[in-house]
Structure formats: C-alpha cells, structure tokens
Length: 272
Ligand SMILES: [Zn+2]
Image (cartoon, rainbow, N blue to C red; front, side, top):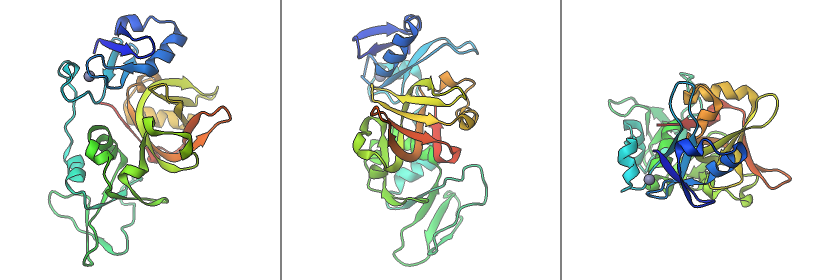
C-alpha cells in the first residue's frame, strides 16, 4: 500500500516521502505505523536492490479494509493449517526438527498411522487417548496471525523440553509482552517493525512495533539461516515479516525485554 499513518505525529505518509525522513526519525516512526483505513499494525519496507520501490504493508488488515483489495493479501489457510483449526480436540506436538527427516519420537501410547489426507496425523491406540498431531512452527505462526479463535484457543500443545501448555497461554504476541513474563520460556510472536545492528560481528535486533520495547536478538551465526528461511536478500527486508521465536524472555538493566535467537529450529518467519 502507498500510504500509512504514523501514530506518533498522526500524519498520513506516502511511502516515497516516508523513505526520505532522517534515519533516526524513520527508524522510530516505522515502529508506530498503522493502516490508514483499518488501523491494523503496519510496516515500512525500504526500496530493495531488486527494484521494488519503498512501500507500506499490513498483515492482516481488518475484515472490511479497503486497502486489502489493493494489496492482494493472501489470507487463505493451506490444508495443514486448516487441519489444525478443524481439529481443536487434538494435542499438537511441536516439531522442532524442520528439514531433518525421520526425527522426532511419538509419545509411548501413540503410534503413527498414515491415512490419505491426514499427513502427519497420529492416532491414539489406547481408548480415550487424544489424537496427536505433529506440527512445524510455520503453520502454527500463520494460524496465530490469521485466526483469532486459534490464538485464544485452549487447545493443548506439547512443546519439546517445555511440557504441556495451551495455545493461548504458550504463544504471546509482542503486544502482550510485559516485564512480568521475564524468565518465562514461551513462544513469542509478532511483526518485525525494524531491524537494528546489535554488535560489530553482525548480530541483529529485530524490533517489534507499537513502540513496545521488545526485540529479538539474533546471534551473528544465525543471520544467514534466517534470511534463507525468509527468502530475503538483505536484513532490512525482514521488516514486515512475522516472526515466532521459542525462548526465554530476558530483561536488560535498562528494562528492555528481549528473547535470544540462536537456534534456527526454534523460530519461524513468515512473509506473504
Ligand atoms: Zn487496512
């Protein structure tokens, strides 16, 4: 979309004009953008080396937002995501071994059963045992973004190393992050509003929007993996992507809240 509103100065900006703001002002204001039609959290993406001009975007827009029609947003769930939504009684086991075939151990009372149309489904052998579905983080993230019932559901989830949780308690959107969660190992997710350099070695801060003082610190040896997973050429193009990170919320001396990302298997990144 060509325009977005900054909640700091309540000005409606044209993307090409926003791109010309002084660097510090731009980095601050890009964390406070909303869709001018529906008020959804929005992002600013600089012009890319491949020729795409500077633009704004938002995901998802409000149901009746006019900007949606212009932006051609993909909001439809794929079959795996729909399967999660259609089976709220299942126990979801997070599969953190993306790309590594043949790993992961079924729970003792479960046995894998392959049936057409239910790939990844595990059906309990014992009577009364809930069905277990193993799911990767990316379809979970998409459901968190697009489905409010999923975000608020009490569906049970088994997180390797962390035990049993419910969807609505385990996954915390960046707008819900607060100091009281310090020390909690949870699934933190939200839109990346801006990207900052964290140290000389190339570690990155991925900053949340809405002026929330929450960021994800990406270790330097993770950056190329993250770019590959996001299918982005340069780090600034990560602005506007959604990110889900499993980790412990930490707090710096200055009160900044952050999660450290040093394992690509514990994150998902999503862009339309
Ligand atoms: Zn909108």
